Image (cartoon, rainbow, N blue to C red; front, side, top):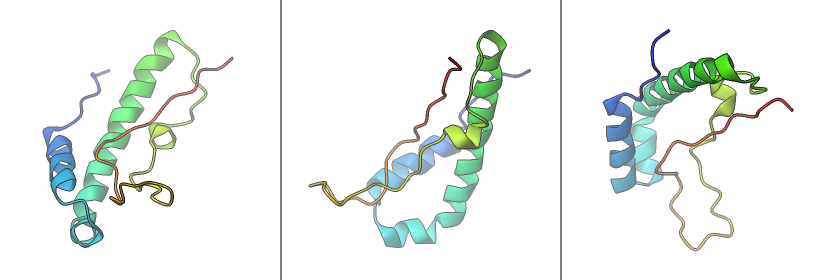
Length: 94
């Protein structure tokens, strides 16, 4: 069982997204986003595996734990369309 690691390319993608947070850039780089999303799913799966050693986690998979990258800009003053970070969460069995 190896330690879950976030690849450097994923961090670079987020930095580029922060600098170019618009639909045209994102559409052009959609394949890179998909690749980095898979890296994050692998990371979340590994983290879920590690957490499950010591606790009962209800979250079905790493993919289910991740939040989407699209922002809800309806009521926001800042209208950038994409998040500059990866986020997610795991639910503990109660």
